[in-house]
Image 1 (cartoon, helix red, strand yellow):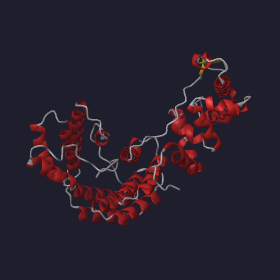
Image 2 (image 1 turned 60 degrees about the vertical axis):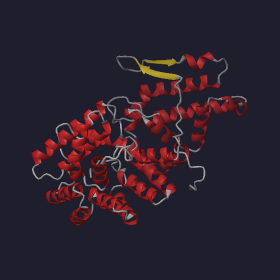
Image 3 (image 1 turned 180 degrees about the horizontal axis):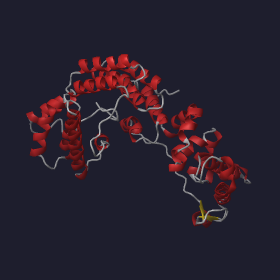
Image 4 (image 1 turned 90 degrees about the horizontal axis):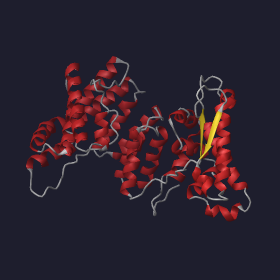
Length: 400
């Protein structure tokens, strides 16, 4: 098990080959059982026999990464992790883009291993349990994680991994209880929500699984792994996110040299259609943003050394833009002719969810800095936006 692993590993090998391949079948079976150390030499041979098979190489890389955790010498563990990453890079060069491969590639280039606790005793117990997990001894691994949890009841990874062992042993109710415990320890890490969603999905509770996958995204939306469970759920139900892509009609830039000398550009697209109600809306949007480039940012954020685009600036500017659209003459008649993205934006504004919209659909590196404080103060609004606007519901679902 890896602390950063976003999903349960799945081999990309053909599990029903046209011709019987006992070695492949045995490798897949060991892999499914979590016996990665035993599976490793089999995958190494398969790599030699099928040098152009990216799926085989990916599975081999994951086995090597798990094997690293079973080694007693730190330097040997480091070298094994480097080797696993190298094999994963080879799979990537062959066109492999799987989620699991991305996890392996997150291994530091120098092979630095994860630390589970600042307390030496707890960290060593966790590493020992990880080694048992990699060898497929799940009962012993769980006992190790439980010991670590007794030593440190605030250890998120210990609670998470106990739950994951129960998941692999198909004791799904107990798995959920431990994932809930991990969430109590840290509600702003995404993994326990996502793993709990997997357990609920395995129980056939799709609506509840959807809710947990949404919570994972709410916890850490800008972490690649947080959306893995939700992506799998959407693919399973043949659905896609309801994204709203506003095509910017106004851009604001500050001339070199700073100060309040602002250049505002209105895109040609918004001016091409005579009488387009969006034109004035974008002008107001750009005009308000230009104020933020000037003195307004300094007044609102006196402790920040330089201007940055903020959640407050963007949501305020979009709100003014929507108000301009709604205040225009014959709005009720003309609104149905607005671009669909504007129509959806108006619904979002009326629901009081402009800020979450910005944080998910208009975000950049600067705005992202405002996410954690907003989530902590308005978590329910963030969840509502993802649930009500971003993630579709199944036609026969009973979502509340």
